[in-house]
Image (cartoon, rainbow, N blue to C red):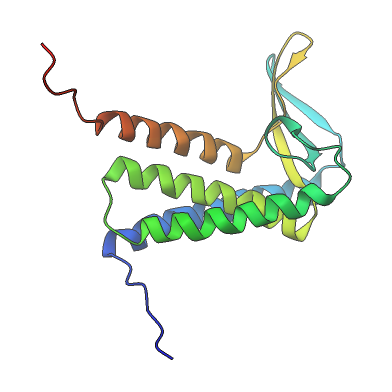
Length: 167
């Protein structure tokens, strides 16, 4: 039986390392939040921002948070699939902005995926609000995912072929 080995381009190692740093930083912050703050505590840091400790059993904006537990396995499966795909994409040479997007998305997916696997929920600690309206709480992994999607979108728009034959 012959096994194929995926060769990782030198710049791919850099992008995979960046994804690892994002995931590890996210996990370090979450570990500190869990160790030092009781669940539900919020510490006001600005008139529009709290540092706190909350759990999310769902996905973005608490999607499927009340689904009864099966969603954990769905999100873990999706995280595994995304991790494989993004790792393969990053193993090949890519334009820098595209690779940055993939790397940030991978780091964010890993950060939240580790939470789901180890805890059964994602630890959130950032709360932005205006008066009584609060944006759903989020974390570093969520920020990395968001910035990764933005970087990828910009890269895709830059590389879009111009229409030919139009005057």
